[in-house]
Image (cartoon, rainbow, N blue to C red; front, side, top):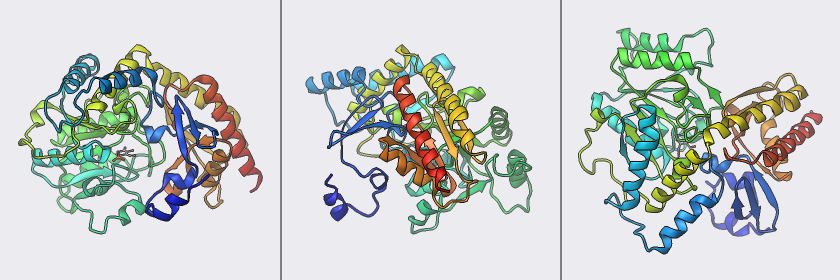
Length: 420
Ligand SMILES: Cc1ncc(COP(=O)(O)O)c(C=O)c1O
């Protein structure tokens, strides 16, 4: 395996390749292959970008047809047929059946850019600078989104002060603290020192934060709090949207309607760069070009995104997500949790995390992930001290492959617990 070129020339900033030090060549469904022809099971899904599987054949065909037709590829935000068809489909098949009425913005094609657009628009609408974000949040690496992101390592890279955000303890952090009452107190107490925010920004399931699923009652109370105080509720569905949580949007289970929603990763269908920021029509006070970008509206991604939605509806991917989630949960409860009483399991739909934090061994989760890689399983970490092993296979993973991956994980956990 020759990785010398990368190690010599590619910046030290590279990250995932350090955990998975091989050279990948092909991918199909939930399987990856490297240049030695070794096969890996993917429990990472490109950080949640290939929920419908790598090189999904249905989407692939649509892409090939479009490429062969000499269809326009780069069009900035000009009108094109792929864009029209995506918007029409998204509106009629995804938004309207859910009673959602949003306008759609195509920002630069990354999650962080969708979030930049969201908070700019919130601040512009409410003419307030502050944003409430939650401790444990991850919203991206550009400065506005990074200001709402809590992990120390990412923030240290900023090199400037990250301002105009107030962090609120996430509901799981201090069980005795009612975080909604806390927010209410912050904005009503004239000695809190905190400015009323334009928006509260949340992930309904903190993914990078360690797989914390916020409960439905808390989400409903947050919606009511925002309504009461004329604050916008922004949901970042970049990672847990597109059926990852068991429903297309992660907030559906709470029956709430956010004012602004952001998506990226799997909304691009095929792992292509794509992002959308959606908002209630009355918030659309942008001036033309006010949030700009050369790669807004990647035509191939429009094709893949629409095909991804067709595939999702045709194959009932929401149901598959729930069914696979039950398999994952059942397996871990039966086969892995009994290995050590200090383990904790959290998750919903097809995103799960096993937390090793209570076992006082330096970087235990990291060691387990390294063992997984040796057993040809690609799996990543999350959470404080990276103590959580995060299971996020393609939502449509085949049951046999899923069980093979789970068995490899069990072996890796067993091996590592044996040594402590
Ligand atoms: C919840 C959430 N928001 C935003 C982002 C940033 O997305 P991107 O890396 O595409 O900028 C991520 C990336 O992992 C994420 O998980």
